[in-house]
Image 1 (cartoon, rainbow, N blue to C red):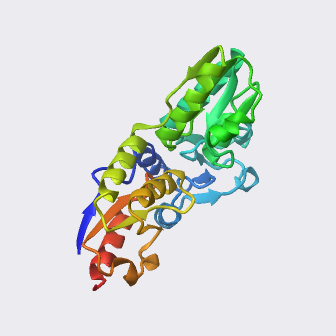
Image 2: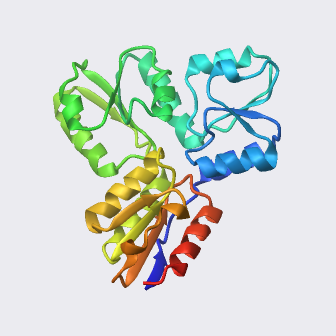
Length: 276
């Protein structure tokens, strides 16, 4: 069985930057998981003594704190600064941008629509910068339920599918006098999704590597599954099952933006060991 890795996969700029920041600040804590990959978080704690604070109450007075790649709500940032410790911002710049847009457009009187998961930490953070009406939607069906003013500003979660975003745009534009659209889906997301789509159309089995809570990894898995029925989302090599590869000629590999190379290599090594 041949193994082929997607042309674009794995760590994005924002995650690489956040990992570097954490490694340069041993003994600090992160408010919420730095990235959506439990194994990498465990490595940071083991090798660099970077602990995880799940809530603001868990942050010790005076302790240096690294803000996660997904960002945090604006009020939480202010409360964190009151703790007296150094605040080190590892928020991905591609996440900071929609925060700034939402804040500005909201001040100018626009209703804000965010294409993204209201329960995702990135969207919670972005929504917190609105000073007026703000709505998180997952598709046109959600938009249809909203009662929006004539002026609407639209942003997207950085890891969402452009196809669905376009449908939301096409729904809003003819129904409102002014619609401001900002493409806040990051380039790494486009590149990883395009590469996964291309490979999945040729592969007999696709292995999508990344955290089970990672939005961009789940999007990759969804894309792969639409082209290759035998697609599997795994976090580690222990999840691999021999029967997935029986009778297969080409195994495609892709990985989410929060997946480090050492995990990818470990999984590929395990696949090579499986005799089919």
